[in-house]
Image (cartoon, rainbow, N blue to C red; front, top):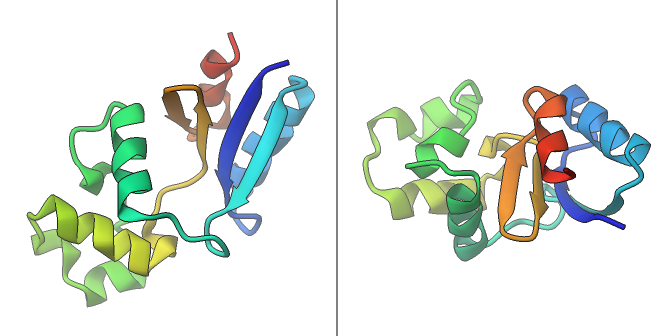
Length: 117
């Protein structure tokens, strides 16, 4: 049985669709509601690497109001970007699905299926 972790926001339609897709595939799923259980800087840095991203900026939801309020478009320091996501978890793009050392963003939800192969 494949075990995956999904960093989930139940209010997000893509997150709900991704969770449903994983359930349909028969995966063993650990659901982490990251708005209730915030991630650490270290966990986020690991996710950025597992997702194959060059910068934490790629994991930030730039359309969130708090993004503009914190002037993150001008921020160049990786640590500061990670700390902003820890302090304001709704900045984190979602959903993120992790299996072993690999992760995929569920946008579109089908993108996570390659983790189950």
